[in-house]
Length: 574
Image (cartoon, rainbow, N blue to C red; front, side):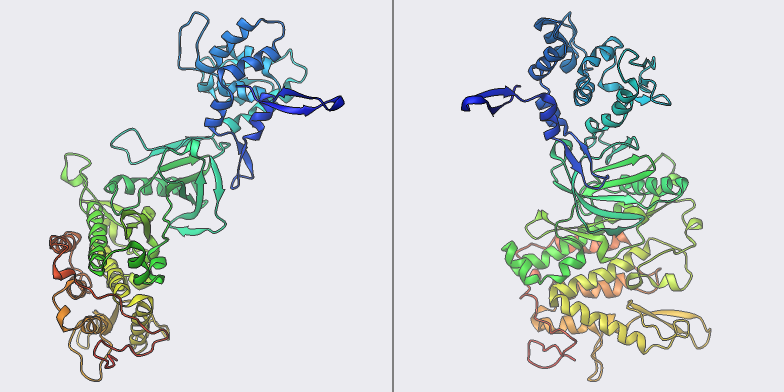
């Protein structure tokens, strides 16, 4: 490859001069904005610019004492690993050559070739004081001292620093079928191939999440943007424990579906990180701020398809969580089976991908960093501490010092599904009204342990007059019971009633009743497990999409600010 540019000379005449390879390489540098603006050359551009012709031209310039045939043979060896006898080895040294061109030391390529060093031997390390270069990967650990050069210290130091510009890693799906993602063990000086990064950071388990764009030459996935999750600084043992814990969680999960895919993981010096597809629709909270009318209109679907989509999403989430809740056989012994608990189910940990799945998009559970795995033989003994849980979605067991079990995820999803159905039927304002009802009821419940605080959760604790023990009960706003004229706080009842009498046996009423009776049972022994929830929703999805069961007239307008909601009959519902 030879590129020229036009220059003006005396008398107005122009001449075409070839652009030096070093200038073309420098023009292709990409700045990584999250790594002190360090720069890298995309691997595709490096191969494009440093083709055999361009390398030959650079060698002719660097070795005027040799003829063109010598330079052509050397270029073939540099680019393809092809020796003079025509034999081919998969060991080119094009990256080494590029580094030397950028340093203005092209002639030193002969030293590397004589010592049979190639790109596989990168990165090179330097001896103390930059007195020599050597490759830790090379079996002979040959030391290159460049003693005949004018300033060997500068050459070795510059090579050590500049080599990282051609060593940005490539991220691609794993080749092994039984591996969810490749784990890249990177040098602390490696430059990640990131060309864009968002200014906003998002919390994510034990780290921070940022939206990044990976250069296309280094991106083997169909996604252009990724969520880069970098773990918080912590003690090495603790850091590696949580890093491996998250990897194990994704390895345990069923690939695809409604658990977010993990694209890559990496170790980079003291840093640990993960790459996930970026959710273009944000979290479930972002979805709930949009009106269902907007979603349905943009997708150009009927309301019946929207109601069925709600069921599909909830079923898919539970189905894939079931793959984690139930044992994944790690060995032939039953007591070696693993059971997983997410433990931090909340809307911020459910992501909305608008371009995946159906025209309405797909919901996926994220942040498996808090996932806990327990072996069957010891899961109860290891689960005494309930640990962290988001306030709104925490199960009654947290407040009653019960053992940790997989049922806490079912309770959390029961809360989340209740809000999801509320949004589908009444929009974001309805979710806020539901929240206000729960808070108001909490204010009226006397609990000395909380003082004057009111909590937005789905249960209250009552003291048994005889045993003085605490008993968990659903808040009345979560119940679906008959109301008296003075009791308008039973939220599920209100939602179902406002659908109208002809909707009693359709999807939303049946789903709400199941949530209330089976998923939000304060007694975890009677609460449904993952299999029961999946079975229930799977049975509903077996109903034909054309069935009146999915009938839904659309989301009702719900006033903001807690105003009275008028039912379809024109009478106040509270």
